[in-house]
Amino acid sequence: VDRRGSATSVDSTDETDFTEESRTCDGTSVKVLSEGYCEDDTSIMQAKEFDANVLAKLTTLEESHMLLRRTRAVSALASRLMGAPDEQACFEEVTKLLVPLFRVDRASYALLVDSEHFLVRNVTVNHRKHAIKMGFDAGDRGVVKPLKGTAVGSCAQTLKQHYTPRTKDSPFETHKLIYSMGINSVLATPILVDGNKFAGCIVVSLTIEDGFKVHDRILISDIAAMLGANIYSKRMKQAAEKSNKMSREMLHAMIPSKVIEKIECFWDESSEAYLHRHSCNSVGIFGSETNMDDSEHSRSFKKEKSKRDLREKIDFLNQMNREDSQCDNFGVVVDSSKKELGLTSQALYAENVDNVVILFTDIVGFSKMSLDMKPIEVVDMLQNLFCRFDNLCDKHGVQKLETIGDAYICTAGLFVDGNVNDAARNVLNLAKDMIRETRKVRLPRRETLSQDSFVSPQIRVGIHVGNVTCGVLGQRLPKFTVFGSAVNLAARMEQTSRPSRIHVTEDFHKLVSFEEDYEWDDCSETTVKNMGKFHSYLLKEVL
Image (cartoon, rainbow, N blue to C red; front, side, top):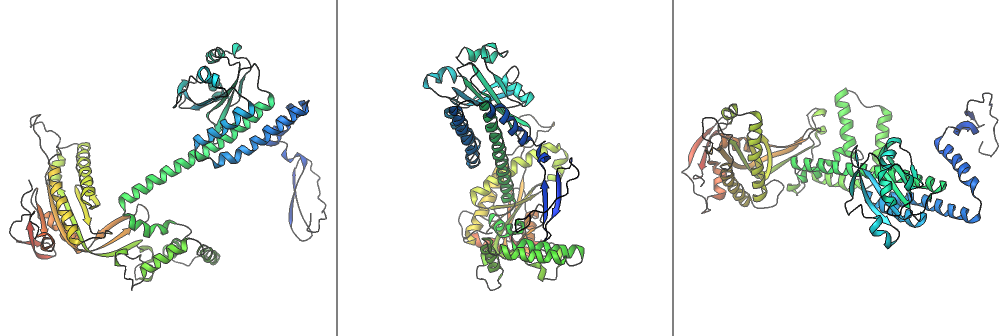
């Protein structure tokens, strides 16, 4: 049909071809579908079956009104199921429709637990007098029953409705039981998810024999189809939310939350930072500019997105990037495309932070010790020790940085408002508790020792305070790291420390020397490889 409403002729020489294509006078493509095009469509066939089995057999106006009312109610159910917040709410919406509209005496859901069992839950009856005798088999959490020898099991095998018009004649023992309760007809309708995967059944019952008409069974089948689609959607959403929560918790465990806020735009495909970074990477990797059409599309895409909520985030990032920014604690996001580094060497984030306290600790003689232990024993011992250290970090307000083998590294003063003296005290108290907690860790018993002997590892601790550079490196498994001469010096303090002792630099000692709670050995001079000589102090032995 052209724009003026006149039809163009279509050549239909082949009757078996249900689709033909033609063009109007202005060149518009028109697809023509003949009547036979939808003959094999499942929905069309079901509609024709409904016409033949239901509509053609209606004899009274009352029956027509009832069918129309039920059909409209079932159609409206779809939107309510989509708006339901979770799976339980979907069951409640369906129950609110089934019991009053179809006047069923009992409704319940049989949900698949495993390949051999199902769970009966959400039992609802239409009269108080039925509550005890018809709802006895399911408590608040439901009752688990075997699939074998039940109508639910039959539905699971055939994926089709199972209708029992007279329970007294049913071959299933469960139906004979419910016949004694006064239930005479039972309809079990499969709930299918993700195509044809059986998830359970809607089970509705009546006290009269053969109480479910053909149109009732068809409409309840439609309800089960809608319920299955929404259950699958809710389960997928729940699984995605759980996965996202786990991923975010793992990410927060590796990278400080304030850093994540600054770099998350690099994973947001609608942000300018994401588009800019990936366009730069494509140039750096392939050594040529991107396709003109792609670049024009990117510019258009960025222009549209800049009008949305992400504009605020981008402005915030730009503010942090200003060299004259007075918010030193916020850090900066590095735009390394403007630097002399290669385009494929862009750091996601980098920041210079002053007065950061760094603590290093490792196990004395760990390499030799681990040779006498099974690998699983080594891992178990480190897990035991490091979990204790994690709890201590939370207790003292110190941030765990990472573990490398038997070394445990943590910092104080990163992204936390506060006094450096307070951070120093927190780290020193943490170090003392680390030594005490290590004594509670038991090494695997050796054959040469008695069963009652208790041998624990010993740790060395080194602490320094200074200026560091921190950043996030890598896009896959991004890692937050801290580096600089201050970090190296803290590591050297640990290497030159003594077992179960705390070795600190003079810079750190000045922050806590006035405290009466700490007793120190006399100042000594420590030679640090590649860094020269430094004055350092050992804390008196921790009791």
